[in-house]
Length: 285
Ligand SMILES: NC(=O)c1ccc[n+]([C@@H]2O[C@H](COP(=O)([O-])OP(=O)(O)OC[C@H]3O[C@@H](n4cnc5c(N)ncnc54)[C@H](OP(=O)(O)O)[C@@H]3O)[C@@H](O)[C@H]2O)c1
Image (cartoon, rainbow, N blue to C red; front, side, top):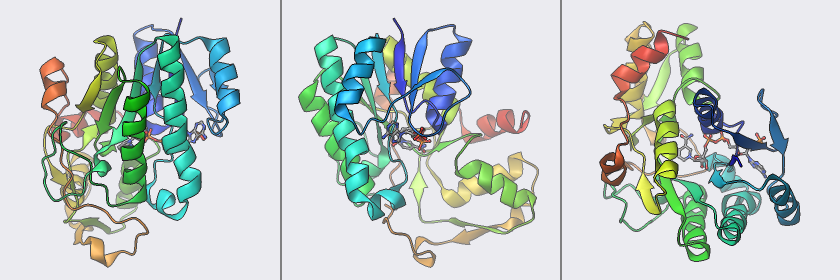
């Protein structure tokens, strides 16, 4: 029997799949619109009946639920569509896992917090200020009420090579374009490969309840952009300080949602610092 990964074609899902392949562990990936290069099953999680039928065929040994509408701005503009995947699908999958008696790992976000009381530990009550954060907070509660054995894993901003902001930043900087980056948005970013390892660690240990997989240091987007420019040998002067107020964004962003991840650290989660992670990354891309 295989681990089921929803959202396998996504940024984190593709890295988790690669890790499982390296370890020779069987898994079945689920995608919806974007077919990945690895063998995977198509399933639109909007449709509960279809989901139950497909999972009945796959009979997974565990579920790691990564699929989501993960853009806060898109969720703000499309609250009904995003609710179905971010909340309803998560609860439906949790009910399936409960009935099948298998582990269920739900991925949430640091954006369940309002940014006024960082660093946030695993016990801090959610206080979201954007639709995406509200949906993830609602899903956390719904999943736990449905299946108290579930693990709720809050992720920080993830960086790495793939379909996310960092690759775009590097491409723009390499093209000599100035990069404005917020000095007033703090997260505890984690290297996506380390977050994938953290998820597997929690799954292997049968973790339940709340966990954070934050990186080891709080950084602003501006700090991150400087680290990235340095690691890729790009002129740091292209990185310019910007403020959230300078950019019109549908979803409000909390100022500081740095995470305290002591519970996962105690279990052996060891995220690299950004200097080490970017050096390793820059040497191979
Ligand atoms: N990346 C981060 O910095 C970050 C930070 C905090 C939390 N998280 C959370 O971590 C998880 C993974 O994030 P990510 O960055 O890997 O997200 P991502 O790259 O946006 O991938 C999300 C995946 O969800 C799938 N999906 C969306 N709607 C679906 C549907 N109706 N049915 C089936 N699949 C559907 C998409 O598949 P298709 O493309 O095939 O439609 C996509 O591959 C998410 O739950 C996200 O909220 C991520």
